Image (cartoon, rainbow, N blue to C red):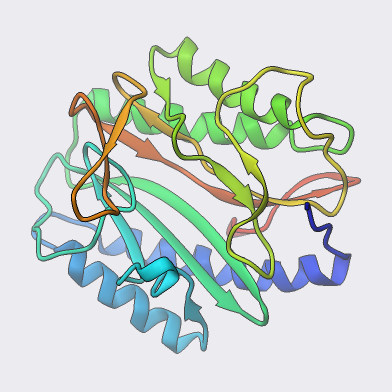
Length: 249
């Protein structure tokens, strides 16, 4: 069941998502060669504690960290470690917060030092695909319009969208209905209504869309070892259009 949020609930979600946006921005400023993803995870938890918020992912279905830190061919759910980042890596950071009774969730992919032109192109395409999808998040459209807008941008750029992992509704629960695929057909699927809040999160691969799960039960990597990028915003659908709650103003 899709839960519609009242305007006052959306304002509470704006507060939780603002914390996510601020923390991701501070993490981004720390990303550089020689830092470890474990350090970034510990810093994210410290920042959340300072904001009197709870990291949303830590303990969720047994996940042991606050931050998902996915390096290069890791698509999602990369587990922080003492792996040292090096010049030329790209790092996807997915972070969530529980605050004031509501969840916030967002993700960014950032370069580590100087990266290749191909990596920059992939990251730009993924972020643009996210905004193309968000533009379609208006009352009266169908969920397929959101999904297709993402897929069309990605495939026109020569990349592929991950099928096995998707976006989701969000609110008092981290994952609510509906699922939000990054591929689809315009005019198909659930009709969008004001009050829906969606976490839209394209995961885009340089090569095949196929992925595989590592033995740790969490880490998802590209099947062919090519790069992957991930961007995400939490978006409220309103009569005035999409309202990006996890964006710094």
